[in-house]
Length: 212
Ligand code: SF4
Image 1 (cartoon, rainbow, N blue to C red):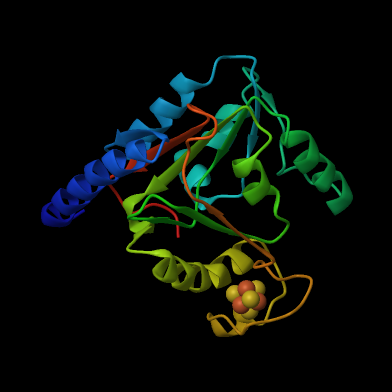
Image 2: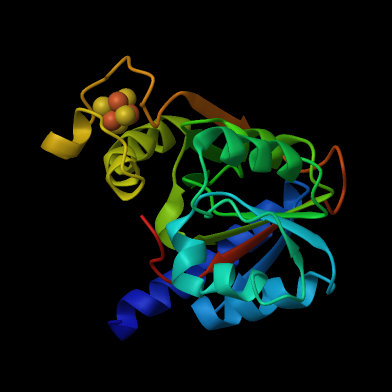
């Protein structure tokens, strides 16, 4: 990465860590993906039950393979199973010790904004798992909720394509405001702050562009 761009990302990541800590989350700075992965692994005791939200960021970090390595009780949502069985894994995941995910946008006011097809990720971030670990690159930081919504709509077609959903946006690359069951935009969640359950929501901000 260009060193001036990296310099700007580092400053933004540090600024956001302060903002997020003031909003009641536990927030951490990570220099890059490897550093973020190390922080995540150090936070999760071996033998814990672990679930994940669908995320390109977690794939990029190699975290799915890490959770499959036998040291954890992993609710593996990526098995080749009928959808009804995957939904059951989502339901079990709601009681995991740790839920690890990314997020679609983080505002400069410390709001976390996500968009989901089935709602399992949005729901688990808000309530259920004992601890939530969110990993995000600073490319997900936006000024406000209006900008967050625009960002959601920009990245949703990529998520539809990645997850093999047959939606109008996979033909055009842009949101066509569909109203179909296969939509990846059925649920939008906003977390305003992390104050209700201190220490529950942990956010690792990576000074880099990661995921969509
Ligand atoms: S609303 Fe429909 S068309 Fe628009 S991004 Fe979501 S899935 Fe694609």
